[in-house]
Length: 328
Image (cartoon, rainbow, N blue to C red; front, side, top):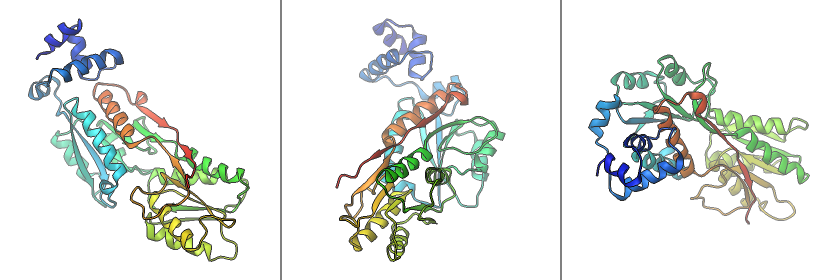
């Protein structure tokens, strides 16, 4: 099955079919869906070698994730990777996973760029001042970030309004008359950690928070810190966490202190709620964002548009979070 045959069946030009299958923006979504469906139905697969010779592309994109943590073992991160890989595969683009080693700086990325085995990079876990991204901009290499950074020039990014999500949690507490609100935050140097904390501070600016801590984002650390708070003469009325692991630790501490329910219950708010594999059920109000599958699909679409020449200013998407009330 050739492009010419698909074009004849659909009553389209070969050029339109080719541009639809390659993700160009000048093809309407309806036409693209028709072309993709017909190509899928007839088992059409473009010749990868011919495409490389024609376009000069490697037809490969690298995703950079930090070696200091284990995002691959996180089921949510894995869902995003699967959706991203599947959507890129539809465009005959390979996804390569690259470990960003601690203290290696941009050296690994520089070696990859010189080898010309990648057309673009996806960088996750961005820092406020990210030397990797600065290096990529200086080399004029295509990249998109999952998260944002403070860069001098426009760049492509997909992110969540982290400040808004934390503000919503604080405002929900204040509406319930809760004023002793504690922030249980991570100590990682990433932009989303900074922005989630800043949203909390902005929302509570008119009053004094109960306490703010920055600790390792682990269940143990969340448990120990929450126990320390509960041991005080006047404990917090609400705890807001910036990660699922910290939320589970806090929930375990509240359960042990019998503060999950009843008149002395401490309200618990958490970005993304409890982990799916959590060992405890607790009434947690989750700060939700788009599903990981949706994130992977959107990221893939933005990558394809970037490879087809869309400027960075057209590849910036800020999604809005929302509160999901506790179900228990």
